[in-house]
Length: 261
Image (cartoon, rainbow, N blue to C red; front, side, top):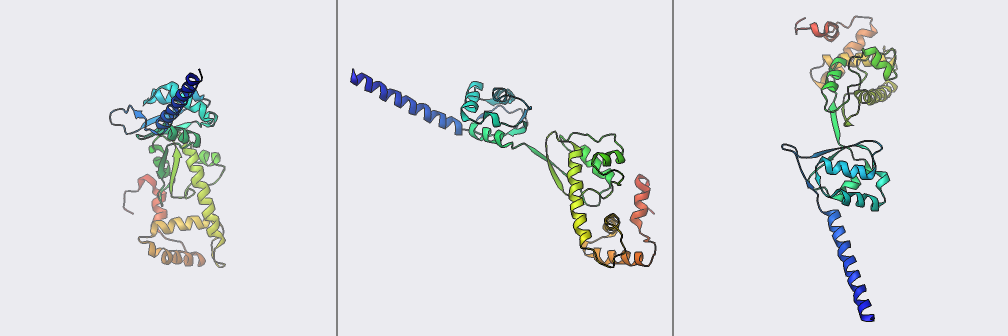
């Protein structure tokens, strides 16, 4: 009897080891993905409030070739099911169940990007945002002054107010959110530049410094010429002379400018 009992224990222990080993292998083994023709990844959209079981269902329905019950069990026994974050994700070939859960818990969403180019007008900035992939168009149809109000800057002109840089965003983010980040970045840099201004500058405010910097940028052919051109304009302002610069006329013409003045 004791031998039978001992053999049974050994058998159960061996089965447990095999099961444990199989589980470890599965957790680290890349999942098979049913990719659509022409696609290299699977897009996952996890809505807020989705349960762990629901998340597993979304993953399988989106193209992961894995038993949904197995994923549900893994999420549940990991102890991290409640930490899964809603958002937009990309499932790439080579992703294991362990890596998948880590991605969902960390909220490693798929990021897109949009670049705002130095010297662009606000019209060009808006056009770039409208063309950006999977960026929600919250500002379409709004007048510039309304957009500035929504950004917490009522009464300010939008030109030059958005720092030129590349901004990343999660799929489904709004264009207004990108503008807020660009506006904050410009505020920070403008304040820093104004704090370093010369004591004898003819400029009266950070806004005037921004306008002059924009004119200099448009007038400059080479970066090395900025200081010289900026000095010419500053001296004209000290003497009360008109700037007499093409960029101000071109901006005033807007879309009517045909390349000739």
